[in-house]
Amino acid sequence: MIQDFELLELIATNSRSTLHSARDRRSGDIVAIKLLPETCVETAWKREVAALTHTQHDHVIQLRESGLWAGGAYLALEWMPGAVLRSVLSRQPLPISDFFQFVKHSLSALSAVHQAGYLHRDVKPENFMQSELGAWKLIDFGEARPLLEASEQAMMGSIYFMAPEQFGQAPLTPRTDLYSLGCTLCWAMTGRYLHDGDTTVQVIASHLHPSSVLLQNLAPTLPAQLVEWLQALVSRQPSDRPISAALALEQFDCLNINADS
Image (cartoon, rainbow, N blue to C red; front, side, top):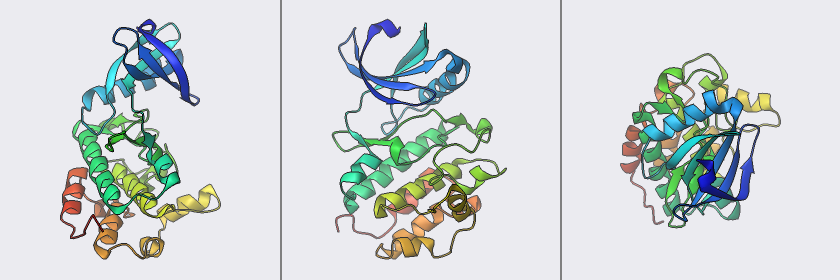
């Protein structure tokens, strides 16, 4: 019950939910409480609870409990006092060794999500959080859907990280999340969007009609093997991307690159 939690501080808010830090009155633990209005109980709340319940992994945010209250519904999530990737990168670029760790943690998280039968559908720098010990976790499953329902309302998320198929009628698959992760990784390495423009239309057009040398021009100093691997993740055609996050991680582990350089 929501009465079991003492709300402490408003962390974030949007049109569909608010996020607070809170203290569990029973244990004294600090948690994150996500509150959703009554209008979201039958849709967003149930979907997010289902996705988090089915996805249990060290690199995915943990759902402690959930329930209804007079104002709507809530999720009690593990508290992470770290920072999201975008905030971390606003202070300094990720060193190559930290970048490699982020690659492995993020792909492990996506692999767990997909194996549970879900797509995240909103992979972007704001949705990866680093713990105080350095581990990365995938957060915010508000747009997650079961694989068979993932193509409904497909145009969700940030246009800088959305896959080309999200702008059209093609079905969404695990390769859709991989594309978004690829764009996130390019941003993490360079501090620039792989697909950019002065208008929304220009950004979408860049996704749909990418230059063959876009990544090379964005990151000319990256090792050739890493560029080739990233290029596969952000391929325009889903069939040209790795078939799964597990395969992408396996391919990454085979790259002959010194993470300590």
